[in-house]
Length: 153
Image (tube, rainbow, N blue to C red; front, top):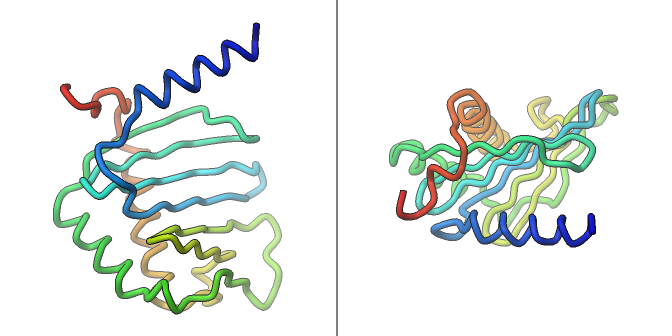
């Protein structure tokens, strides 16, 4: 009974949450003492979706529509970072306990950086992470339920 309910819920969520376009970029932030995960997906049409998870379970999903200027800024930063030339992982010289790992996916490439703002990652990747982290925080603060962004509403 429980498995069929979960399956039905997953099907309903997938059907109720079709993005209007493909994903432009995705940021995942994991770690810290609580082991929480934050996931930001920015879609080509400017929709930004944030999922907040703990211990593998999503407990909150928020959405916002980005202004065209912000979407352009994200596109330029992603292009400038040169994802095709980046390593797949950047780790600082000294271990960071209870730190955060940031994964950025763009055009089929995923780059992971552990505490990248401490110079472990190249400047272009750090700029992308700072920019997407700002969007994530903005959606967390001002986002609304994602159902409001479904087509026809």
